Image (cartoon, each protein chain N blue to C red):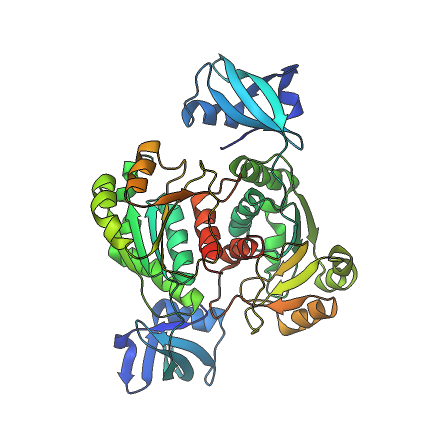
Length: 236
Length: 236
């Protein structure tokens, strides 16, 4: 936890919060904070600043909060991801949010196992939990938007061209010799397939919607590794 | 499995192999291969090529192998990593090997929990298992070298200057305003700290050995995410 993420309901007065539960335990046991300790903090979807511990109780702590700076800039990326297996999805959500991604579409694809769509990981409360972990890690307060799209063809043909309008539209696909651009310095919509890749028909549908395919060379990466790798490559 | 990784002992004659166990199960159940199916293959620490299924048995399959091309180039990076927690170590080993890293040092640091050094993950056979998964993923045959160094100060003062000789020497450290270079196009020795970072004394010791500190900006990433992020940034 590099940033204590606060909610409106934590406030008990102007600039005063009570923090309990997971965050309290972490501050006590891992950060070993005491009265007077200063931590980085931020209010969800709002500004960031510092919090000073003013009171330590059995199950909560009181802090004085100053919110005096803006959260870091998001990266100008819309990430469209074939739904990964649940365990990997958790980690990917946390890592892409820590990297500053704010718009995420989870989509179906031929090689996405049907059972993945039934995972509790996809429930709103759980996703929000991973997002919070990502924000706490990356020192950010702005929650991402996540959309779940279960009909590949309808989504790619009807919605994706609108989503990708005025942005660089690319599909990461190992089976092509076009090499992915780097440091693009512009709004980008990046589509990443499932383990095993998109099938040819899906690649064609994406191409018809304006998404050119790019690879990162001879090596093939796991979706989890590829996601971070591509974000770094596109935005450094 | 994007590449079937073969060992010398799989060969039963010139260009003929018998494959059993985990690889057999994967080829049968996931890749759904039949007689005549052609797969990418490679011999450990040797060349790569194709394998054609010539016989399918209950617990193994026979293949005809042609090894006619070289494995992909390694990336010119020596990765020095404060020992991560075992579960994360597994994933990091697999991902960095899939990315083409060939020299890895796992080192101690103030914030590395002592228990991590006792993990079975660090046993030679287990590490080799993760390396194989990484090679199969990244389509490569060249095994990396891994060294375990339990004495931070001795290692950084005596060995690291020799390891880093004639290379760009950098420590990833969030608490600095120097921004990490990208696309360095040269031999690099990259030191990455534990969750929570190196302590100041460790950073100073690294600096004395010629390792300047760099951050990647305001955001702080998990070691796992940071490793892939930095490799992508340094070598694209």
